[in-house]
Length: 607
Image 1 (cartoon, rainbow, N blue to C red):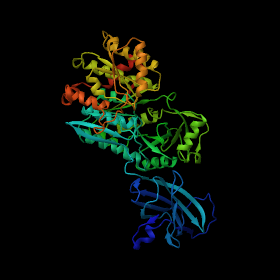
Image 2: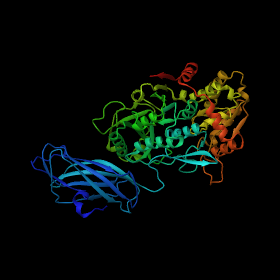
Image 3: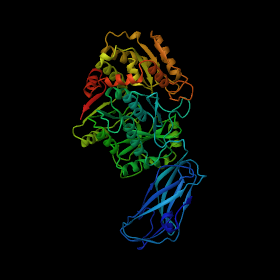
Image 4: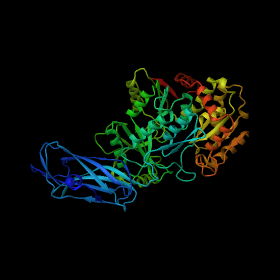
């Protein structure tokens, strides 16, 4: 690796190896606490081939003795596949160090053009007379191409005066940020850009400052979409799952995610993300596993407390109420885990910087997949027995609930802090249905009743437009049997409709089978239609199931979002949609409490 440096600071800037020699000789021992501690800060986490890395290395003599430096070593290697090893040395550098003295070194490193894309770890090694005392992993950077993401992005266009939001990267949590903007601006959005036809979202690749970037991206996006100082009555803090956009729409509240999704090759990347966040005052932990639709391992990096950027957002927008929402159950879903042991200072359940390996199954193939996708997993000790923790995508734990509430009150004691939780995630799915119906009923002068049910698979929704059309959502996971979804239609959704609108003839309602190629797919919609036909239903609205739910004006095909855009424009128009939507009285937390009493299965608590 080429080191670029001015000659007059060659000793400082080229310090990739400096040897340590004590003034008071001690016996060398591999388990001895090394005297020099290194802290490495990079100017960014993702680099293109040919770019230059600028980093600051802080070196501290942790010993109580003065020492004379001769050799330290900085090693860079590809930790995703073991290639690209580079070790640079400078011999004979003699620098006196006082006890606990700190020295900062600025390095400028050119990335060789032959280095492949991937994750590169930076290791710090201390030597005396060529004997390795200690070699520690310190941080990483990633070589990427110009099309790869290191944080999610929501591109905002204006089409005929209408805001159009296009998510790229992330998954359910980032999706609800985009949908919050669609709801509150009465604009439109797709679900997300796909990495291949009919496939999942583009991957967000790990960098050390991933969590801070994701938090700042969320706040920055909202400030741009809504205005930096516009008053916002209510804010939701939650993970992402299908009903969240509907609850957001009913409360007229943007969502601040409590976690973000990142793609990784190694445990070391997660270690560094958590440490970097902690160093910036952001308490967090992580769940790490694999997903069949993603070539990388994936991790939800989860906030344990409100970061300063969220607190500032709450103050800046004069928020009066914060609602924390999530599933508290530890059975069902994706809850089977083993904690990873990598630092003996990390103690207790959901501790700051703790890492949990999630096991969707326990077959040999499952374990093999984990080890293939997390290439250094075998280097780390895991607890012996499986435990059950909060669901990795939709869960929230008691520590988060308590910390978030305390942080809200620390901002301003007059801000109301409430929580909506359920042991069973399914009950929160149906809160999307209940809250939509309650919003319609609260604003009954704006509606003529329920016109239909929209079957929205994971993960597609257009809450404000569906509401204007008089459609109530049935939210479902497309891999469950069609008979189960139809059972829920009749036993839950129809009963809820009848509660608010008793004279509704549910058999005559329109049934919109709102699948797309990347959500639900043709087979899911066809199975539902067949099952519904058996039950005597025939009033269907269908989509073109060979098209992804992606906004792309250049592809000459119309996605669901593009069709809805044209439909609204040709009927009442987006300007009228906004006036109508803004005129609706939102639900309050008291309204949600009533829903919990009527339908059960979820709890509402004001703290």
